[in-house]
Image 1: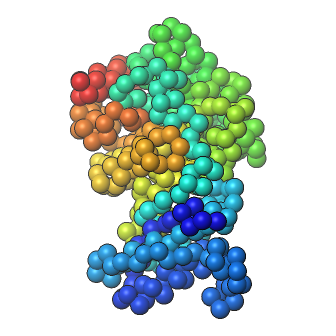
Image 2: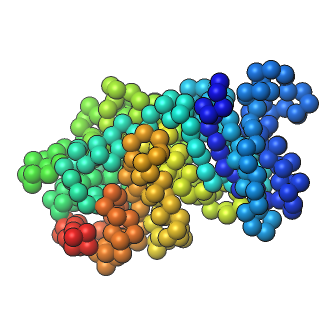
Image 3: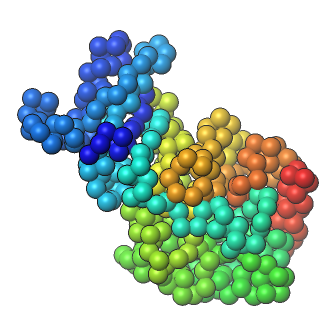
Length: 376
């Protein structure tokens, strides 16, 4: 295979000096592919093609180096799980190594086509041709299907483009999956008809039955407009399977639950852009949810911007997707958020909406007006 077909990963490595950095990079190149000592790597194809190649190694600050290591697409095969395993499998368990960049190269780019709908497709489905989309989160856990459906209908009336299950709604006895799905999907459809909307209901598929694919298809049959998945718990392979299945054909929103330990350390794990932008696109997500700056999770403005840029980068895998910052959203912050994220974004409105009770639709309407004023 020609060298330019390889994909390249940029690692930030903690090391005392250039010699240690070189040794660590050589260890990554072996660990992520053959997982054997260098002296026992078979000659020929395995040594020449499969083993990772160090293509660059440069200092990046005191005690920090950046290495670019390339890999053969043959080592990833046709599975997104194995691709991520090559990028950062065993090395994720070593201290002082962080993935900060990924160039998929032409073969991986063609092999993993990305999102089925992406930003353009979601605009077509929702009818929101310009400006930010609003996604209202129905919650809290403990309410029954009827109460959740009523919240959803009010939010559609107020102009929400997406109604999203809270990720804590699974199959609990208070609002079992099938009952909640039917009630909310019917409520959204009814509100769409009454108010001339095209809002989509994204139901949370948690795999409670042991068969999340069957749950996703049940959601489609019941009238859901999309599904919400937690790839850190269910697996990125499930996202990829549904995104690639033409018989499924619904947009996918991915939730960041359980991903914090991957991104929070500046010295190891994955950069925010890799986790919430690049990986989600490779798997096939159409909307990537992440914690917004100013909320309770402490993500910085720089980190959030990097996520949004990775989601929408024209050079990324497949069609650009929509970033979905959540937390700390309010009418008062609408102008700042519009200035920060631009127009291709989904704004998640959750707990703050519930303060408005029966007037929750008016709160959505106020947010829409504030965004339109800021975007004008």
